[in-house]
Length: 240
Image (tube, rainbow, N blue to C red; front, side):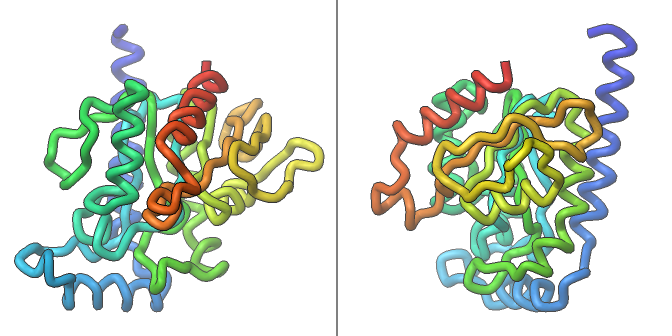
């Protein structure tokens, strides 16, 4: 890596770190603040000895990533407990095992912020940064978080693909500024859009959709490991 590349990477990392600090201190949505802190106080019995994070969640991964994975929101007893997106619950178990199989992670598990997990060529984030009641953010809460998503994605200079997990993330990504004619299409598994404007480049990243990696989808077989492996393979092809 040249000195110029090193300087650019340092600036990117510094920008992402500063943004993470801003996200993690946000108290913009009273309903979400109240809920995430209530969950952190009352805890689930299985985690009663743990100290919950109880704050908003920033993105995580490789700042040089070509692929960003956009989820819905932190899990109440997953990321809201551990402090890292998709970490400590069944959704994360499914997601990170798939990333490991695809060569995008150094290990198949994600249990805590200090478990040694490293991602390669992928950044993982969420449309809404606080755990919502019943896992259902309001449209106003989604819109309040969109500026964070836009700023975070702009700081990924090599970004080529945004993989949206579920209809909520798909709609949130479209609201960042789709420019393809007729592109405000409905969510469908494996749906694609060629470009997304509004993220600081002449040609924005492609959008790719998948069913969410939720326990409900993976336990019922709506989303299987081979199905999601195929989605990741498509994301890598689009990012090439």
